[in-house]
Image (tube, rainbow, N blue to C red; front, top):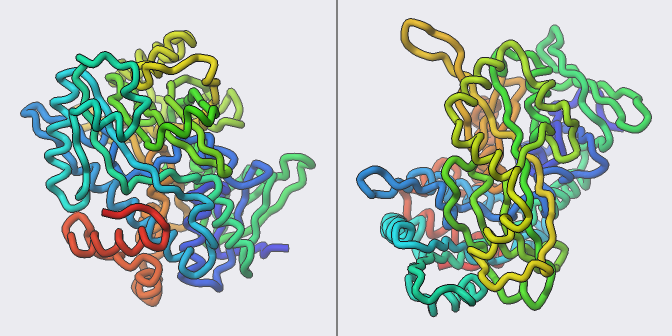
Length: 500
């Protein structure tokens, strides 16, 4: 039986809660942690291997992280942020492998080159400029570029076979890329937490109440999803890492900082190929250019996936719309999240993002024939019978409130891509909102939570321990080329992945 007065409650048993719990236990093994999960096991929503692309997002191939400016230059600042944030995850994983907490990195991580691939003169010119900007920086050392069809075919034959030989094409490749099974990783982390003292996970328990107690602690009420019995604990700190379910729980907490936040659900559909003769001829994650107005999770890509030891291909995702906030959620989730505080920001975002609305409507209305035609743009010789439809995890794009300027001040909204950390003023509760590239940067997000909510502990003992887990903590890898090269060589060796 777990404590009814734990130090920390983790809501949601996905990669975010599992990572934060792991880091906290590394810093202070005496902490008492309790995790609640509404499903029967961990990693059942967005963290599940088939609910995401498994890209170790290092911004090597995702073109949406490198926008082209009006003067033709390419801004790589966002790519550099994501790239070095993934280094934090690599360091945490290498530390856990080194101490034996994760016996074999191949249980969740495989080398897999990351490629960008475009066709058409305008797109080729963009990729050429992008490569020039990125290859000049030490963080992207080793990025290859080619406009030669034969070279590209050598990297990824399926995307070139059957293509018009006169079509202008270009590709970049980073051999240091990875394919990550975040579902397997979550299980490894939770199993490690369960193997030690001071940790309990309650599956089939949905958190139904969050209330501040007079002494500043949080009363967390959870209900068993089968028999309806209640379990109540009082915690000093609460982390809401429940994916699409985080917004309703943030609203339930009633903290002032969470007022006005809203969410816009976006579903995804993959085409999946499990035919070995095809999947084994493609060893890369190949990202293309997104359609105008599409959300980041909808950038088209043809991916190698290795789950449970089997190699498959995924293509997509095709964006869709559902009012559910979770794949296994309720159709009333969106409507239940509407409040007098966020209705104006939601309408504001709807007005300012007509292109996104049109894109989603177009995606929903697409026929299976149209969807397959999109795949054939990447894989000209694709055959329909080799592919089946698979529903991806549900994502909730964050709508962040902000105060307008001018004579008519009011609370407006902004569509926030990426991950948003919302915390109470006293830092006793934190909610994590948003989507991609969340899982890849889970360790970096955990550090942000520590810095925001446990700064006193970092200054008094935890800081030194944290540098044992994350050796480059406090070092800007975007600026320090030697440290960047050093940590990548070290983690690549431990994790059995490629290095340049």
